[in-house]
Image 1 (cartoon, one colour):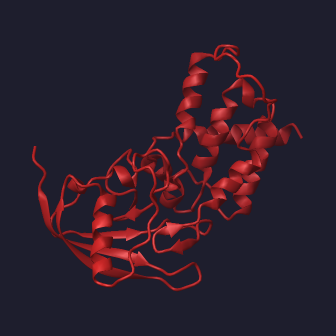
Image 2: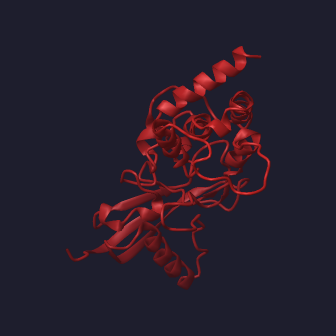
Image 3: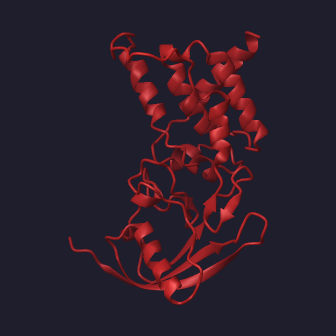
Length: 253
């Protein structure tokens, strides 16, 4: 099926110089966009147009453009990553939009994710949570055989499902409380299900939850918006596992 041409689109985008300045929406018009273009390709075309008009181009995060790195982070028409399921912004295509439509683009909205410029937010908070406990301590040396430590298949599958989290922050952006519980639970779960993660399980759960609270993320109220918008379909069953890990850690003190 041949790609169609969207003759005219209005792009209503959030513009903000830095975290300390006041931002506002600006509206631009773009024409003749192929439905086969990715959303970020449309943004590139718009930026070329703005540069030719002498306007500062729109700043937005991107890297791999393959849905792997978790860098792209746009809130499009009221949804993290836009009007599609199980895709990141870079995997979103213009066929999801109609000719003449107004597309509203915002950055992630969360106290823990301050705006750097325009659509770029600082997600260093996620890194700090990982620094608090998202690791295992092992002696380095020769690489062991893959089957040296037997792991039940179900545990391995659940660990890999949790490890699919790319840390994009869509869960935080989707949550009305700006909670990072899905992210934290995914990082705790993929280690909790494996033998290598058992040794530091208690300190990991306590330290990561404590750091999450310290950084200003909200509490989880089980609205399940995070799971619905997650591009990697991380399940909220991981949140239940995190709660169990945290409770056991506190009881064992």
